[in-house]
Image 1 (cartoon, rainbow, N blue to C red):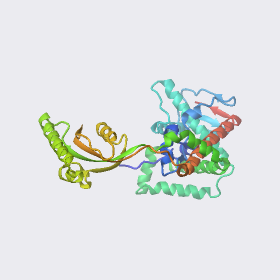
Image 2: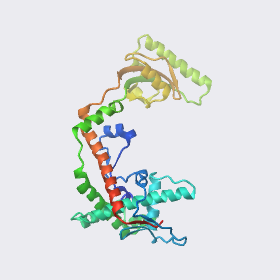
Image 3: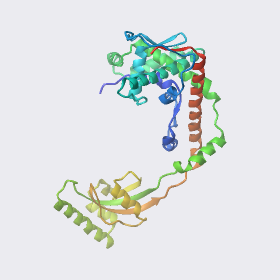
Image 4: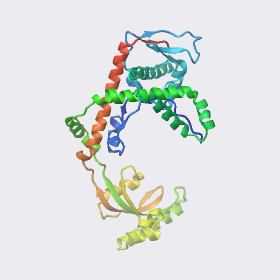
Length: 361
């Protein structure tokens, strides 16, 4: 499979901090990695939620103005070209950050959303250029070497550039913008963000139910496998065998020994042991039967699309409250990410009010 060059995985992605939404809080806080995405772009709906400021002048583009180098916006003395907009639009659609409809009006709205992203990034970039990293050129050079190292040869790298529609010099400038913006956020905005112990505790108390560990069960099973498309006669024979094994188990036969002897599931090598599993991990009929058992109990014959099962419950873990001490640090990172996202967005909104922004699209 051909490697592709991530172009706007660079520039658009560095315009702000984004954190997993409320629906993802539980998984984010339980993850081993920090739940803050340091270089994610702000959601389009947030950018477009800001109404046009008085300083912005809406100017229609002449019908013939379709050259890639045509200006679609001006931020101060900086120009955003149609080529940049088209590239950003394509990437944001691919990332599902914008979902344009099929009508001309919907496409225009999506283009406006992509343009807002570029304006957002450029406003931060212009501020970052006022105090760029001292080793900016070295960082750009290193970033470019990383990009090239992903390819087996210079020819492959050139082919990827061509496919992405950028020149090597354009990629250099995109990388430079990425580094400048990221550095500005890290050095000028993040240090002012604080999260108190009271805020951490409040978040924990408010979300404790959603952060609780789900109930789990540990079970073993014996499977007499049969194809779902098998004839009724074949299925009946398999079920008869399962019922005969169940009768032996009720008579005192060792479950693990029976699994090793008769089960068609690979778990037979462990005496049928499936380990712990939660809801949603097994097919519904199997899950329902397993969770209905008490530790030490054995099910009747359970039919699924895989065949006929005999289930023995070994252990059950009820839902448990999350441990505050274990989650405290992750909650702090999560909340700092939320605050940073808002601080970046508020700051850029202020810049946009103070800067002459001309929309030429």
